[in-house]
Image 1 (cartoon, rainbow, N blue to C red):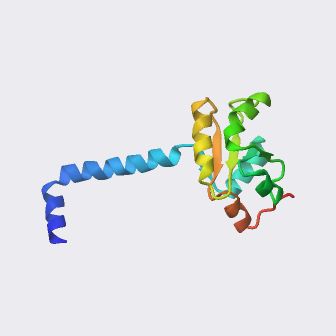
Image 2: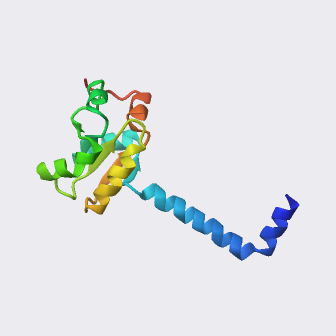
Image 3: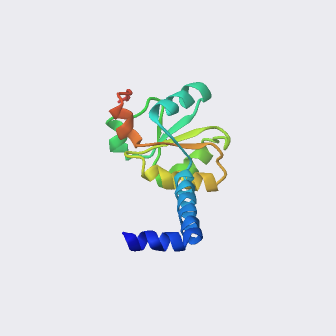
Length: 137
């Protein structure tokens, strides 16, 4: 432990730059794929701004319970379906999956394709259910 402290004190500038780079990387990666929302923030966005909710789970999972009014679209078909629906790229989108992990890649793709208001529900449908919000069947 003393050796580590000695190394840090002798290389303070390099160590500080390393920490700043790590923090910047974490912030950059967390922003990828759209803005993370908790379920209550997502509910406000749906009710206030008419956000479109896209459920990325399988049709079987979707039929077991989903957010009212959400569209069930498989991740590989999202861009194609949004184009066929003529969804404006400025209108808010909310992506939801089972745990919040798969929506990141889809969100990143949509951001690259020019969608400017892409959001993801942090924790996915598991968190939605966990705080007691309703699901439609």
